[in-house]
Structures are given as C-alpha cells and as structure tokens.
Length: 93
Image 1 (cartoon, rainbow, N blue to C red):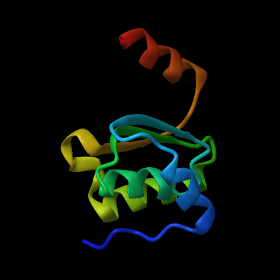
Image 2 (image 1 turned 180 degrees about the vertical axis):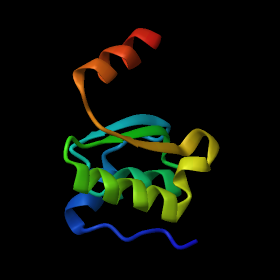
Image 3 (image 1 turned 30 degrees about the vertical axis):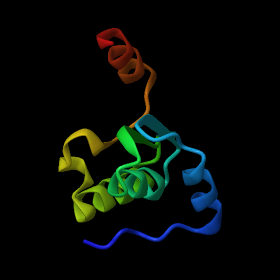
Image 4 (image 1 turned 90 degrees about the vertical axis):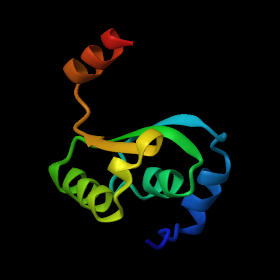
C-alpha cells in the first residue's frame, strides 16, 4: 500500500505531532492527516471526527481503503462528534 501524500499545510502539521501520540482530528473533513500518521507509524491511535455526514463518509472510506482501521495500535476510527459520545468516551478513560 502506498502512503498518501499530504498537502504542504497538512505536512507541516504532521511534522509537529510527537511520535507515539494519540490524535483527535476534530473536523477531519477527509481524515488524510490521521491516516498518513497511522500509515507512517507516527501515532499510537487516532479518532477522526466530523459532524457533517459527507466528510465523515469520506473519512470512513479513506480509512477502509488504506486499511488503517485494522493496524493494531495505529487504529483509526472515524466518528461523528457529539457531546453524548464524547462524554461516554471520556467516562471510559
């Protein structure tokens, strides 16, 4: 599988993410940043979220296409960002 190519803006953001980080990409739009970071092994885990159905569908499609949702500690899950889900996730931690 080929690693996706980031725009210069997203590449600059990717460089600032510490190795082994857990990432939350709020308003992910397409999930390119978390997918790239998962593909390169830079992050331990990521959540990509967007409240709009179209971008969330695109994010889920990219995760499925790249297989980054099934790569162990580099797992990526696209979810709709809602207060109730955020609270439920925080309560489990």
